[in-house]
Image (cartoon, rainbow, N blue to C red; front, side, top):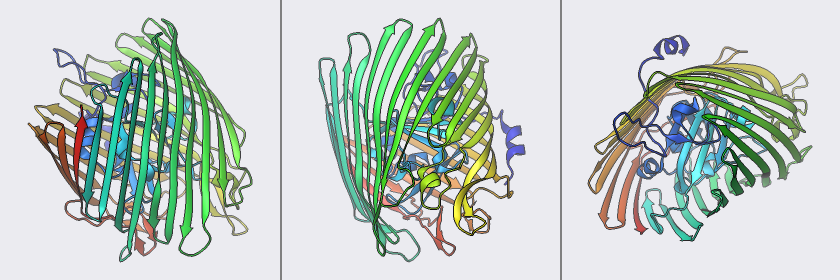
Length: 603
């Protein structure tokens, strides 16, 4: 579906950025409702000031929806398509603005989390129950974050210390013999705040292919956070997240473990200079046990040191920083290399001239495996009044070849990094009770890496393809008198420029509608998602049909500090597929699922 001619003419129609937010402005005369985000510019700015296309999913929305997987929060959001190999902890791929899974960067509390072998994030293993906020920043951000920030940067924030709550306990059960329990505690002593939270969940699962056997999943996870407020006005913090368990698939099962550890020190040097240092380590480890064959493992570890400096004068800001990271892998496979390092230097200038904002950023990366890459971005924004703004941006980005691309048996150590350029035009409005936002964009990618047979007939990765992705993102939402709604529409034209075919597994159109209502001690809501057809293969001969699903939910605060919630996903029991195992065998959804939970909050 070629949509760009339509979307270019539709830009000025008032649709909205989601009102899900981490901060709400005061409901006073002339005030606007504009979320505060940190991912887009490395510092707290409103969505409008960030000059980017941003969706924020706040704690209230996450708790209301009570999703069973992190990817359920992302599905159908502006510019985002999700593909999975079945339900309950099965392999999941996120396509942001039509780019590949390894072209979307996942951060957890500022720490990069992904597999260095495959390149993509293990979305299916991130425990959504321990997440309190998500920021989705669409468009290139390599000039701030380096490799892989091509289509989007998605940052998940784990549960943080809360002075208003001392803890909570929750238990739940559902069909497919699903059960889960979670708990958390928050303690403060002087300037030091400690929070601990954990969960365990398991399910017998359901068939993930037609006429297949049930495939289970179990997961144990925890988050520990210590924050100490310094007398100077800064703070020191320590974060540990770990998620581990087992998931069954068609042909075996996998033991997995995700872990992030981060130590951050933020101190003001003067009234005009703020300094922050962060040391972190992330791990993505899997051990595969096929029903036939030999077990294998893929363990990756990334260690990072980052130094950020922000200089402010009047209403302008200059950010300068450096980042050093090392990737290490350990595997039963014989990789030609098992480590590499990367050094990055970046700068970002933010200027404000009354109603007009200008941002410029530049970054240089030097990787011992694939060489040097320079990326940059420039963005212009103008506010017509307190509510209406237009933005125009251009940016470049790159995706590094993975260890699989470079060093796996049969790989190609001469690969270049994928490189992209993107242009975007957007308009938005932010008011006391509602938002609207619309954006059109075009993304061009060169040196796309694809595995294909060479002259000798042996498959290996090569820089052979080019892609052009055009699209429209359109969203709106409001909050008033206990009502809360969000609508998001995406029209996408993801084209392989070499073949003229649609890029595989990307839906060409999606729409999502969320609605909820608070009625005293009761709450109710629902989510409707519809996705268009997509192709499972590059040659566009294997079509996956479009589908629509409806989720419903209800909550009841039945006693002081006590609450219960019932969620029903895919109420109409629709069987649908977003990927195939083989030409004649689809991965299928779980069908109708239900979950009942009871929670006690300790005040």
